[in-house]
Image: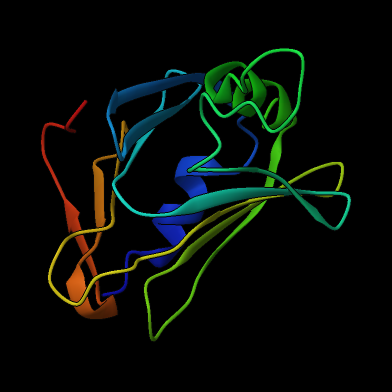
Length: 144
């Protein structure tokens, strides 16, 4: 049994309500009170067909008046509702498409390390593992 429809159910209709940077290359994106996505690999946000924010942008000045605050920027860019979720079969890259021409792309970048992990109150635990495989589990009670 595939759990991929449950992955979509864990995100669609929600918006990002919180972003936490808990280590240099580790981020947590919270979607409503329902779903948590921990990311330990490169990510970027595409808005209006261009890269609006990337994982390496946090605290960079880029000639701006103040350094980039990726937490604030990501929350603003990901504030619309999620319309669709896609997972690339060969790489376990995750693409979350939002209303308003915004996409959040997570690139599973290692042959050995887990790139991302999603847990939801519907019991889903999905992991983009090293080498590009997607592992999915149902937990009872749900992990949160």
